[in-house]
Length: 134
Image (cartoon, rainbow, N blue to C red; front, top):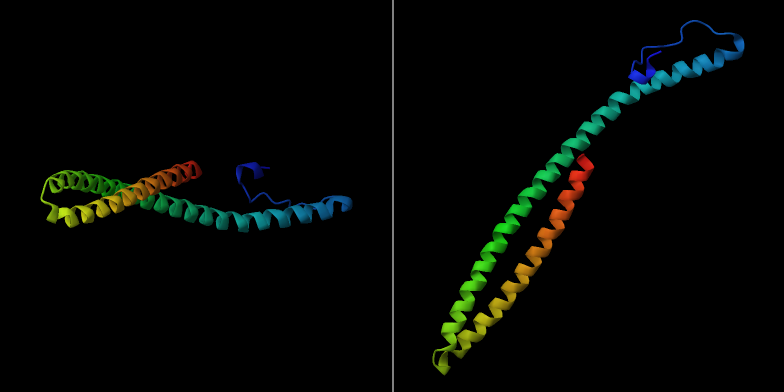
């Protein structure tokens, strides 16, 4: 028999001694059920693999977008630092502008921190997905 090689057409057609006839019938029924189940499992596996690939691609795209945004935020924070230094040299009437920029800088740092945390989480998910796909 070639059952181990997925040859599900190997049925026990010849009757066996009466004490083994039930075993032959049960075997044939099990092979029939297995033959029905394998295509379903195959389709399900293909669907899962496709979905995992899509998730992996989406996670990679999201990671790239987060990296780009983090870079823009870092550039904005650097620009704000420069502007803050200039604003501090101005007259006392410009102090309100300096306070506004400082507040925005704190928010930008918080957003950058959260973006970096999100990138780390996405990277961990992408690695986990990669392990699942392999």
